[in-house]
Length: 220
Image (cartoon, rainbow, N blue to C red; front, side, top):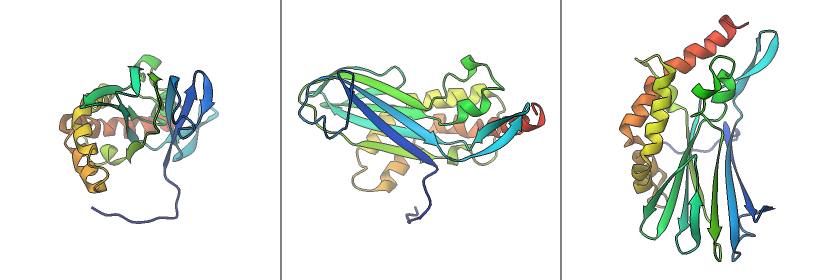
């Protein structure tokens, strides 16, 4: 694999916000505290073009997937509630994984109904009760490779199903992500083992490309 440095900004920013008993607080300030914690992960897609659609300006975002992982010690965090994420147990830890697709919902909001786009989200929320909270680290993989290359399937359902399968493959992601501290390459290999979900995403890429073009050709 290749590792290098760039002066350019990342195409996607990931923000993590914390509240304790309804009051905003930082991850470090939470150390040693107890109460009800809410964590919001937000992915902001900064790569887009602006087109005129039906006489109005609309942002057309480049397709990216952000896979995030957070680990919580069972002795510290209890009663986790994360409707938009997957939670798996790994020994004494509870590991949360979530898949975000920043910008995709906004790009296709005028093409598809809201119920067809409910799988595509820019943020995920987890709430929990904590006792003597200890700061955590979040690992995030951002990629557009899943949307590149030739695709053989042409339905939005294929992409939606692929995202769901990617979420359901959390256990495999966790297995690879435990080795993140050793090397970034191991995480990359781990994410590629989520075969069926990744294949569906790859196969659904043509749908995104075609619909992006239709926003200009059919709706302008």
